[in-house]
Length: 521
Image 1 (cartoon, rainbow, N blue to C red):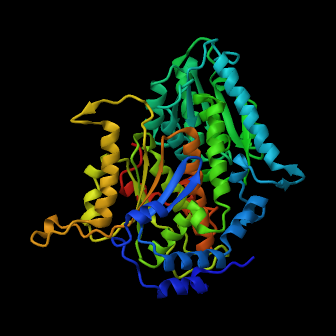
Image 2: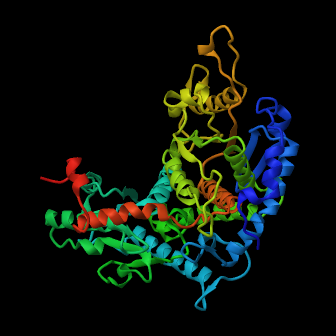
Image 3: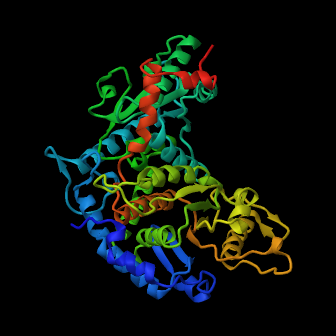
């Protein structure tokens, strides 16, 4: 297998020599029809608003072939060590795999391991739903609270919020992530602890914020002095089999993940599976896995015209490294996806926010962009002014659905709210790409040429959501291969944690805390 930096490839040199096509001129009816790719499940990717012509498509295909991105994806699926920083396999795809073959580690079939854990938390969720498992005072569980941070919170929380309108909730789910005591206090005060189950999620078993929040929960529960209430009997654990938590038998039950699934890629493992199965039932979580598996299968196509995730990745690279755009906006026209951009921030920026290649050597080209976003139409009344008329051009990715989830809508002034939502989505794409000329009043002039793509489906279901999640995971993976990065470690989050621990243990000068008035008392 060949691993080379982007600026060492013939494909990148070819891209730099091409004339940049006009975004406006290529936004045509013909391209709207032809530049669409199935992305998995019922999800479709349309890139007609990106200004991609045939010469550019050929060059992008050549670059993907030269960097052997599909071959590297196949290696990853087969269990090759692709996380070079931590010398680990990368196996989040295996939690929803349909590919043939086995991935073995220490003579254990890891696909069977993940399936076993899925069955364990599926059975557990069913026993909670039927009342076979009750709280320590004999009351039925009605609320589940996930305690975790980063990938243990962002992905599962985004997925829960995305599904709660469509599926009947068996348990209400809440989340505690921030070590800020106000976060935990507000959630705990909103719960009937006798009817609440807490899920502590920490792969290492040493995450400072999560352990502090566990202690917060136990202390707050003890202070309520509920007769016969046993806090630990209301807490389950998701961790690795080698973590300190795995040996703690005070938890009601422990479910396991392993070091081959990174936090930001863990939503289809027990990290997301336990809370989603408890909230909606394991059949809904299974549908999400099916959608993700379908997107994973589509991502194996070598032809970029049939591979939405790879096409999205290549266009993103073109915009970052040829056009020099530093940011990308993710704009879901669905309130259910209100926290999805936050998850994608971590997924993309923690994976590809790197200035060294997979061999820890400095690189001389731009890598991952800044990711931000907010649901439409709220964003239109916030930061769209800059997107339309600001000095920076920011590529845009819209997400939309034909139908709402709640099936409750009313007509106002000749159209329903869902129709108004989608009219705004279509109008924004058109306005960004085509603009509007007002030479007599530049304050009302819209230059246009702002590249936009669209991911869309009939409705945001569990299956569609799984495909959407996997699409972005695979897009980020492909960009990492193209940039020759290791997208699966995150050393950049470590330094601040180390210094915080040193300050807390009085091993480092805490002067900065005094200066900022951050010490209690």
